[in-house]
Length: 144
Length: 153
Image (cartoon, rainbow over all chains, first blue to last red; front, side, top):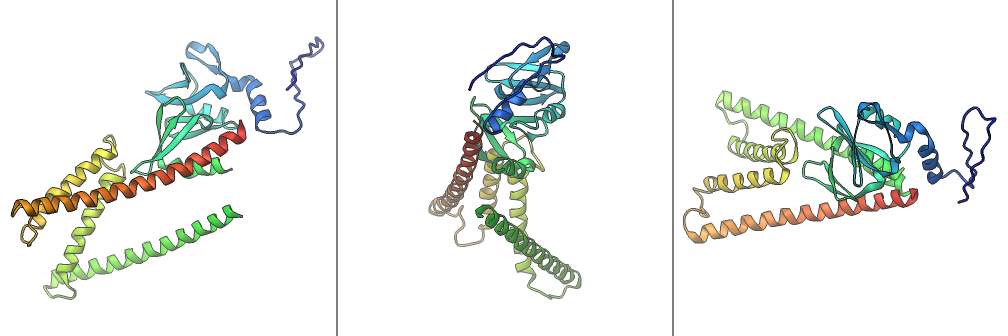
């Protein structure tokens, strides 16, 4: 892929054009990534945290606090889980329970449980529980 | 095409399941009504002993489903632990159930060992069936996940 940056002082705002053979998932990911709203999260004390959403493994709410987990870091952010779910809805994030949203690209395997919930094992080795009420939606998201 | 066929099959299975469910519900309702009438009138409209026995089996099965397969109670206790507790309860309470029969497990050591052996075989079979089911579901999900991820990488 060729990357070209052209400076143009006459522009009032920054502009980005992507020339591609066809608009596929990879292109859409790039579009999502460069969009400021998409890759910036409001941290504790209104500080901005810049994370590539593709690096996020999962987002979880514990004791009314929202935490964002990457492979080796954890960030506390001030945005609510439903706001993040909405913000990341065009990407690979999927709600698996009332307090967790997971990145589908980092799921390693899924195991059924006796109570019809699913045990989601991430590539990092962490285990999360998917509530049974989200299972059918999960299946349809995977097969879409 | 395959997906459409699977969807249609699932819909048909769902509809069939609903019909069966309604039939069992209606049949059960009628049986319970007949049983209550029999107990109140003191007359035997139906074989009450059999019905009571059936009600006992259904209650044990329902208790098992509620304790092991749902989150209605003990939601913080793991499913495996709940299953072990339920299995132990069945094992111990079945001693009382078979007390007056020829296979009374508490009569002698041979009966006890035979009964325990049979119980262990049933448990092993259930565990084997569950493992088969778990592996098949896991394989199915793994295929879907790897297809999803490779399409988007």
